[in-house]
Image 1 (cartoon, rainbow, N blue to C red):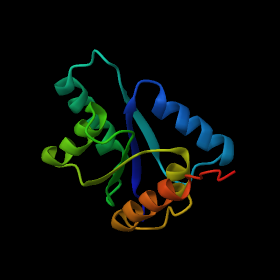
Image 2 (image 1 turned 180 degrees about the horizontal axis):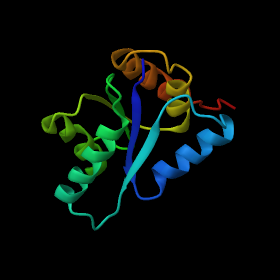
Image 3 (image 1 turned 90 degrees about the horizontal axis):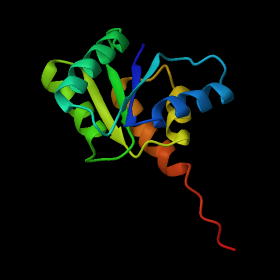
Length: 130
């Protein structure tokens, strides 16, 4: 099984998260790429560019899109890729614990990885009750 992971983020977020993941896991067990959407980007141009990235990541088992903010342009572009024939699932609220959890379960299906991503993102939040 080989699900690709595409981070859909605002500028400078996605590549920084991939870099941090490589710090923890020098050899990433899944293909991971980031599309960072600049503030002045044309959504239609970004959608075309992103579809190419997603298709390159899909080795037959689909693409897990991890978006930084639900309802924002990067997430909306990611969600629209299914209309272009890309087999994907999208989870928003991207954080480093979410990405690391997904990478630790590289043998799971796309459907399973959506739940793993959400669980990892929530589980990485800690409140100090001091």
